[in-house]
Length: 313
Ligand code: RIB
Ligand code: CA
Image (cartoon, rainbow, N blue to C red; front, side, top):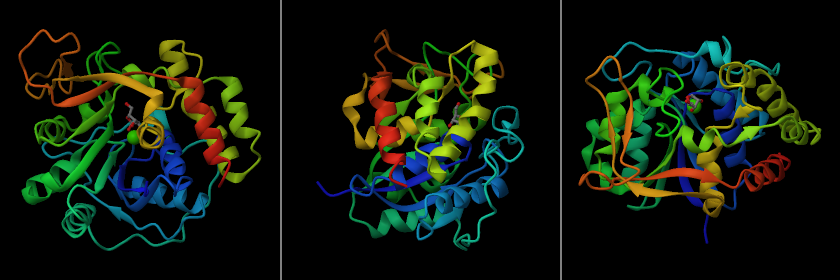
């Protein structure tokens, strides 16, 4: 089986960084055509810088990095420095990147790549707000049917919300972009908080990253040491939830995950429940299924994969 061609759309973010490292460490599974940065956890000038920092940490400076949208489609940007720190990658002390940022806008790269590659052969791995993806779909509707699959981290049902009582951050930041994406007809796999809150970096798991003794392994441990504060204080959880690595791990080992093909709609009208993913998990409506909504994972298998692969870098 040849490696899947993917574009990683991201707002690094410590968990984004781990997802990117996993992808870059897995060339037999993924051919990373490019990394497109979007505003989310922190401002775009930081997310595009952080994406390049992670590529250099992995020693993969040949992967092109593009800057995309610096704000949601129709709303003010909301960021999450309270979770990720002012740089977005607080924890390790990593050098500023020397690899250059591509001149082309990320949205145009996504469109151009989908038009160039054979239809149905490019997967979009989305780790942040869906602004770049939805903007590409609006600008060039012809590319929608050319997408092989979208695997995204976002939303919640049983876990409800992490930035508001009813919304997960990525969908909350740009609910209109999420609505466009979920109504696009593309084959979508969703990694909601329901599963990512079961992917907790407990102390022994984080020690396994640190014990790799490699720059990437140590950096992941230091990122997690920082990133876990928010969830430990808020939820009393036993470690940081590795949200975004669920996306790239799914492309390597889908058997680690389980879920249901259901209808998911996005709340865009209400201020109270903006960005809520209304997931028909129990099939109580006749709304057509439009997404595979993941609810569970083999956490030990997930972390074993992460440590093995990141240990390669
Ligand atoms: O709600 C978690 C998501 O929001 C993750 O992708 C995290 O990186 C932030 O973007
Ligand atoms: Ca993210």
